[in-house]
Structures are given as C-alpha cells and as structure tokens.
Amino acid sequence: MNRVVREGGLVRRPAGPWSGTVQRLLAHLRAAGFTGAPRPYGLSDDGAEELVEYLPGEVGHDFSAPEVRSDASLVAAGRLLRDFHDASAGFDRQGYDVWQFPAREPAEVICHGDAATYNTVFRDQLPVALVDFDTAHPGPRLWDAAYTAYRFVPLYAPDEVEHTLPVPEAKRRLALFADSYGLSQEERAQLPATAAERLRALVAWMRQQAAAGHPAFSRHVAEGHDRRYLTDAQWIEGNFAA
View 1 (cartoon, rainbow, N blue to C red):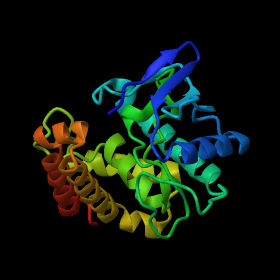
View 2: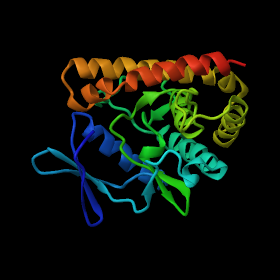
View 3: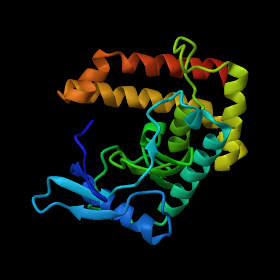
View 4: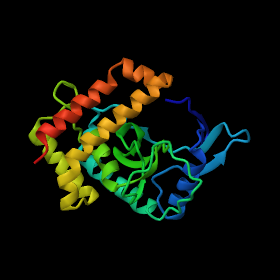
C-alpha cells in the first residue's frame, strides 16, 4: 500500500490523518507492557511521515511457509492478538481521535484491523509482533479475531487451490485458534458469521476506495481480490455455521 523506508532501527511510513492517534495507541501499548508492536517515535517535522521502531524478524508474506502454517504459529498468533487486545482495552480514547476504519460497537478494545500473516513479525518460526496499525479502530474483540482466524487458519474456499484446507482440518485449526485466544462459547458460535461479515465489510471498503481513485485498491479490485473475499465469505457460511 505504501512506500516504507528503513533507516537502521527506524522505519519511516507515509502518515495519514489517523497517524497521530496510532502513535498514541502505540505509546499506550508500550506503557501497558505490550512489546508485540513497534515503539512510536512521532511524526516527521513536516508531518508527512510516521516514525516507528524497526522490529527484526521475518514477515509472513509466504502463506504456505511451514512456519506460517504450523499449529504452533496459529496458537502464538491467537495469544499475541489476545495480549494486544487486553493491552489496548485501557487506551484513553479522546474526541479528537481519528481512525481510518470507523469504530464498531461494542467497542471493547482497539482492533488492529489487519492482523494477518503479512502484518506479523516471526522470530524462531513463531509470531512475536504485529506491524502496520493504520487500520486500527475501536471495536469488538471478535471482529478482529475473525479476520486473524481467516488469514492464519486459513479459511479459504477450495478454488484457492494452493492454500485451502479440507473442511475437517480447517475446523480443527479454527478450534485451536479459538482456544489460544480464549474465545467464549458465545463468541465461538458467532465466529464464522463474523468472519463472513468482516470480509464483506472489507470488500465494501475496497470498492469505496477504488471508486475514489486510490491506486492500490483500484489495482486490488482489478485483480479480483474483492471477488476472492466474497467467495470465501460464502464458503465459510456454508461450511462452518455449526
């Protein structure tokens, strides 16, 4: 989405209207003892860039890599997301806060908004940190957890031949993720429908941004990413409702 530059232990990222709020969030997480996110270093003098700590490790861009698809990684991802949510729950929200994604009720925690393998730092083949908090926003725990489950289990329909799983195996891994995060029985029952709803909300967002001329989202829609998510949403609803 963005041109990101590393300078030693510092990362420079393009700033958005929400970057000041994200910087406050990252500072809160660090103060709360959560180390699975970059330390914030404010904005550049001209306000065009957001400055954050560089976190060493590997990012899970290769969806089929063994370290990304292992049970141990799935468990670690669930625990990392839970720790992040717990640390974010005490964030002091202000009326001047700006979020790229709209807040959702019940606003139990601050959601990451895109806690997927490609925004997860791995060390020793396990997830240890999350990056790219541009899409952070207040919302329900399950809203965030459902998307992370979608990406880490993963919950891809069979036409995504390279990365899909047989339904029994996907169900086993989905239960493992629910255990590792600590979802309640009520949340478990709602998880599949929430994952499908989350994907449809993502499609609506992508199409809105593409229509507004955003080049990256325009490219994603042209490449059919929106159709991918809608196919997966329908497959999830058809196979995981129970």
